[in-house]
View: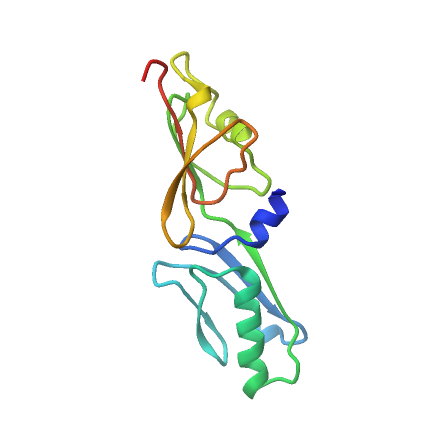
Length: 159
């Protein structure tokens, strides 16, 4: 699956920052970071649940709610301004938290973390990913896509 396709189906979570623009209604433009409560406060319509939903799903709800009481055929745009970070642990030079950017693959993530240590076993990489319903552990290769919130584990050789 192409990175653009993966992100179009991406389910937002706490730590993602979004911007909602209602065409021709500057006072309804909203920027927010999704907190652990999972909602975004919108002018006129109040809280909109964002956590666990895709950007198109949220955009559609906002448009429906605005159209039901306040605007005729509102043109709503929603973009993710900043994705939550991903994490890399194990046998890399600088394990830790890193800013996510679209189209990031495992090879690039390891480079951001300073590369493999001498003890790394690159053929044993795993990604722990929250699917929205549960956490899954995936076997990974250097070309595997990384998503926001992923936890990458680089094992030690001989383990």
